[in-house]
Image 1 (tube, helix red, strand yellow):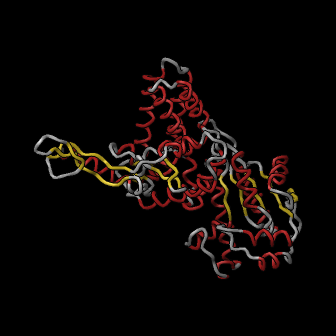
Image 2: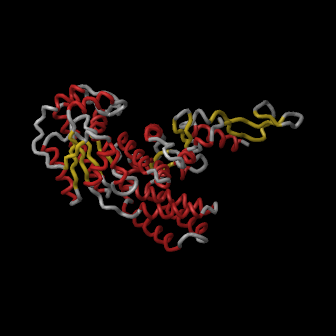
Image 3: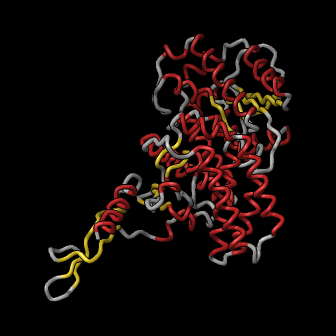
Length: 441
């Protein structure tokens, strides 16, 4: 009975990290002198249970993901921010994880697929998946161990798919974490997040998957994880494939199997830069085009406003003073942005640079970075009149930008030099701007 009590208390403690409003108490089932059973009470404990608050099953993200428009970018970004905080506070474990742990997951997936999927799945696909997985594992072996040593392996959620997240009081709330198996719960934080990304991809919600990835990198700066991401996504998809096969859900399981293979199919990286004066719509365009660029879940967007906040050690929405906008600080921001893009491209990922790019030297440096890797480069310059830019800046809410209408007026006097990027008319609606960009890209 002591073991049962401990298990319930462990479930309560671990799940209250993300869902304190759902996990309420660990209670004994007791038997009185007449043999009647009670929840709580002073009699002999014959079992233990976890008391939870009931919630609407229709509010599970798995259910909402099936309804067009039911899940919003704002909700997903809110979830991403809460998961980042959860992982940042989670216990670091350096005695688990790394290459050995991921290799064990890969072997377990292959064995389970063979056991449960042989009846319906394509044997050739399963063999190819196992081979590709081992190749990718070998390619990132040292990086996996280095991430473990650097503290990226933590006691996370372990089962962070859409069926284990519920919209509660308007906020996506993860619940039902893994508490019974430390090998599943103590993992690389990006592998923990990969279950969510995989499910969003499976539901054809790449825009939301891209939002999760980019908001997480906005907060963490963990560009290095991109090299491991295809492996992490594929392993998570393979888990869903063999779990569905075990439950005789071969149709959906086969979709996950195809997805697991697709995640390991290399895509050529490319670099895109989106420039324009404050209020021109750079960030809006960058995030709209990112999902369609490269492999899952789309391009990483490296935004100068976000990088400036990270360098200053403040939150995304904290306002910075004029001292953070000196020429020296701006130089640091552009250097860091290029460095992060360099790491993303080296990892085989596509990157979008989002900054004012008022100086010809800054624009030349972006093009030169693409030349380092011999990857395609496209520069998009957004042209917008001052009055429109000021109006847009005045409407901004909860944004990393510190631009004001006064800043917009000052920028209007810049000597921009020759702009040899694609010039887009950004006065129209975002849909029109996106179509202009799509014709170029």
